[in-house]
Image 1 (cartoon, rainbow, N blue to C red):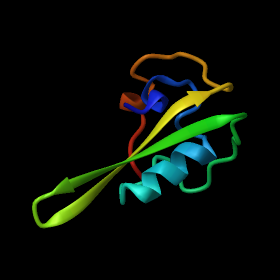
Image 2 (image 1 turned 45 degrees about the vertical axis):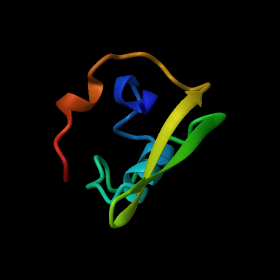
Image 3 (image 1 turned 180 degrees about the vertical axis):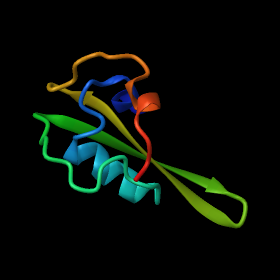
Image 4 (image 1 turned 60 degrees about the horizontal axis):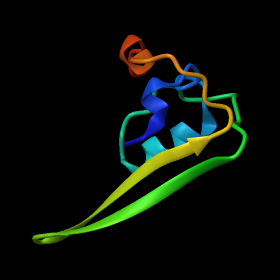
Length: 77
């Protein structure tokens, strides 16, 4: 699971924006301005029937500041 969902910076983070793009999701912020320090992303591949599923998760980030559920309060633009 991506730790970004409980991070204070989710709405302005360039790295999370990159992960959203790779998931083909709408971005919380069109032009994020925060570049996190030392973020590690894992990429998992699942061989589902008829297609390959790819899961992107940020698992480590030295800029992480805990704010549980912070992503819930932002509307997608």
